[in-house]
Amino acid sequence: MTGTRRLSVAQATVGFLAAQLSERDGAEHRLVEGCFGIFGHGNLAGIGQALLEAELATPGLLPYHQARNEQAMVHAAVGFSRMRNRLSTLACSTSIGPGATNMVTAAALATVNRLPVLLLPADTFATRAAEPVLQQLEQPSSGDVSVNDCFRPVSRYFDRVSRPEQLPSALLGAMRVLSDPAETGTVTVCFPQDVQAEAYDWPDELFEPRTWHVPRPVPDRASLARALDLVRSSRRPLIVAGGGVIYSEASAALAQLAEATGIPVAETQAGKGSLPYDHPCAVGAIGVTGTTAANALARSADVVIGFGTRWSDFTTASRSAFQAHGVRFINCNIASFDAAKHAGVAVVGDARATIEEITPALAGWTIEDSYRSAIGQLREDWGTVVDRAFHSRHEPLPSQSEVIGAVNEAIGPHDVVVCAAGSMPGDLHKLWRTRDPKGYHVEYGFSCMGYEIAGGLGAKMAAPDRTVYVMVGDGSYLMMAQELMTAVQEHVQLIVVLVDNHGFASIGALSESLGSQRFGTSHRFRDPSSGRLDGDLLPVDLAANAASLGAEVVRASGIDELRSALREARRARGPVVIHIETDPLPQAPDSDSWWDVPVAAVAQLESTRAARLDYERHKSAQRPLL
Image 1 (tube, one colour):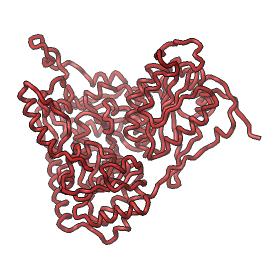
Image 2 (image 1 turned 180 degrees about the horizontal axis):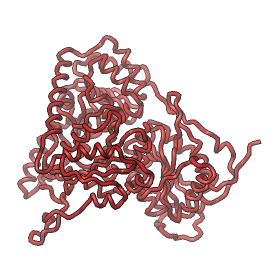
Image 3 (image 1 turned 120 degrees about the vertical axis):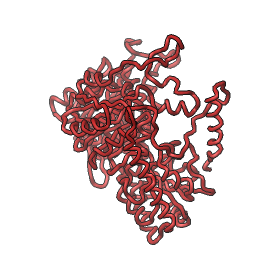
Image 4 (image 1 turned 60 degrees about the vertical axis):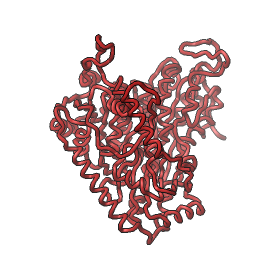
């Protein structure tokens, strides 16, 4: 006869999560490796008590990690799951109210990027015995709505456990989505604070190890045949490698396909590192933040083969990148939603499994020698551009490109760079020379300011054998730097390169291109004579701020000092912040591409009117791709 265990709902949840495994290609992993938590009245006596009891009774059952900001701890979980190729993640527990809603931004980030995270926010009382309670948002038209309903549109799975009997189905549903590579994203299971503490007799089966098999679906024969016919008919094919190549561990298979056929490979932000930068078929980043090599090939491509990309506007240059008459798309994606985009030939399947089907089927077929020669010349030309950007010796302050070059030249072949927002991701995408599939970690699906340090923390937790470099601008640093304190607490080595240009360089450059004269993009005093924020620079000391959080801080006054600091930082046991000032005006090499950001159609400013004419010129090249 099956036995039972009398536990609280929270205790049962912790026991269940600790027993979940994922499996792919015969390798098993813990699906939920630990739990971040910030405790308040809503979860302290529930999830908090359960984690404490587990830590005392069975150390390592579900390790607890202390966080400083609810949004940041979800970012760390995202960084962790991305580094683990979506096969493992972390849970995040908060109280009801602001603790819960602080996670909404990061929940959207995880879902946009198709990365699994498990959120366990507390909720208001299921019994409603003492309403309204502290931090409860009352909705006059609906008694069963709480602030946690904000998670519904940004979660791939949402449930609320209002009775103990609902827990098994909610947790099983959550694990199904976390382990589904086509459906994954944020999974939110809400726990009313009274239900968390309620006792129930749970069947022993709930706590037995359970393995969630992560599949590698193979595309159906008919769609594969259509795609192969299209490739064989092409003269200027181009592969666009997206995040699906990285997550499915398809880099070796992609290299084999490229070498056998000669087809050049361009990369999205999430797909950067799909091939080593020096592979003869690697033409670098594509789109708005791309290389001139990849974008030149995109303009003339007659067949574009996307592996694991969702075709964002940055990848397609707002649908202006692909200009050949009659250009056709082959969309190979594990998610049918993405495979159906651009009216292409939809090939639904795992990226690696699909590539392994395509390669032998194209045996004997290669691109023409003239196309191969053109690819080589474009690669060589772009390499010269990058070398020049890395060593421009701009004075008196260095350029951001020089900083990127110094870091890129300092890292080891398996080290990781982490970034997310501002001008840095675009510059990294086009300039960074990646040598390892997991060496480039830039969150650009949501491009969330403040992701960098928290995401870097998660990446390092997931890959303790790799050195993690966080590249962050002053604007993004100011959004969220608190997880430096968690890195100090856990002795997590992070090398944070804090690039201080006293403002928002990315939006400043965009503003100027749109005729808005960098309005509101510098950290300056208000000028009493003009009434505008165009006075002297603010006396902000971000290096001192980092030191106040417990990090080791180095102030580098130029590129030579930066190189020296990078060498020394590798010896540290905890986080090191290297602060360097840069000039915000020098731009990275142009990508010869366009991004659709509308310009005011009516304006008194001559700069805006000129920008509108330029916008209309580019807009005319936009294509529906139908």
